[in-house]
Each structure stands twice: as structure tokens, then as C-alpha cells.
Image (tube, helix red, strand yellow):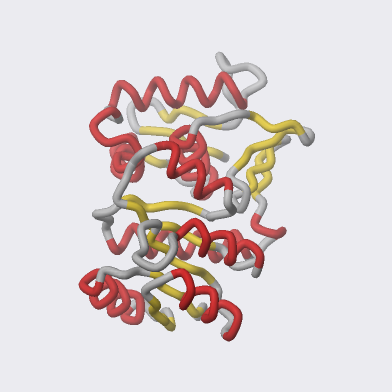
Length: 221
């Protein structure tokens, strides 16, 4: 099982989250600041970093850069749902992000997906002629980037990471609510799916990538 480094200065979160991760079978080390994190990364081999963006010593962005330089996937934790912070973290090479307060089971699911992606093809995911690069947080077609908002990218990544499985609308809403707060509801989910299709589908009226399962949800085959 992969060793995880938790970079967090909130002692209560460290205590409860580290215990939960160890219960799930992950070897877990903890540090409270950027300097300690950089030292730990240079001394030990980690499978993944969990990084809080707001640290008393330095910040999580610096830790994300260090993780990227070391070739280690990182998921950052933030108390803010602001798109600028999310995009900045993803641009620095973070694999994913989770907004506090988060559900531990969801976080573990994201950790396992991130570890799985990192072990195959450099972490890149191919869907038809699309290529998702979770390390860089971008989607390309034939080498040309397709511009997606942070929430559009996260929604597409969620669907692609569960390829072949039906994701209900309730499941999608539960997974992305913290990225945009109360702005994401059943109606706006439909709007986001429509926007993504307009950007990635060759024929948005007859989608071949994101398929609708009428009355239930969506599926990427």
C-alpha cells in the first residue's frame, strides 16, 4: 500500500484524518508546514501527498511544486471554493482537490483514483481522441488544448475516471457540490454537461463520449 504524506497544520484534522487513512491501509506520515514537507519528500518515497493550501509555514502551492518536481501526485485540501485557487493548484501539477469540510470516504476514493492514474501511462487518460492529463489539469485533442473551467474539468474527470459505470445525477451533484457551493443544482448540472459536450464532442447533438442514460444519469464508455 502506498505511503501518504499529509501536510496540514490543523491538529484535529491531522489526528482524525491520519487515523482514518491508516485504518484504510495507507501508511501515513504527517508534517505541519512547507519546509518539513520538502524535507520529507527528499528523504522518503511517497505515493501521494495530501496538502492543505493554507499553512503557517509557507503554503501548499510550494509543496505542490515540490511534489511535481519529485514526480509525486498531490491532492490539495482547501477551505475555499474559489476557482482561482483551484486553477492555480491544478496548474502547479496537483492531481485533484477537495474542499473542506470533506467526507473521508470520498477523499479515500479520490486518493485511490489518483494512485491508479499515476501508475498507468504517466497518469494520462485517453478517451477516443481526447487525452486528459490530471498532472497538468488539461484536456487536449491532437495536441491542442481544449479550454475547460475548473468545474467542467472536474466533472469530466469524474465521469472518465468511472468509465463504463453509470453515474447518477445525485452522485455527480454530491461529488461536485463543494466546487461551486449552492450554484450547482440539478438544472445547472444539465448546463455544465451541455457546455462540456459543446467543447469535447464532435457532434454535441449526438454525443459519443458523454452518453445520457435517460432518467438516471450519464456514462462514459
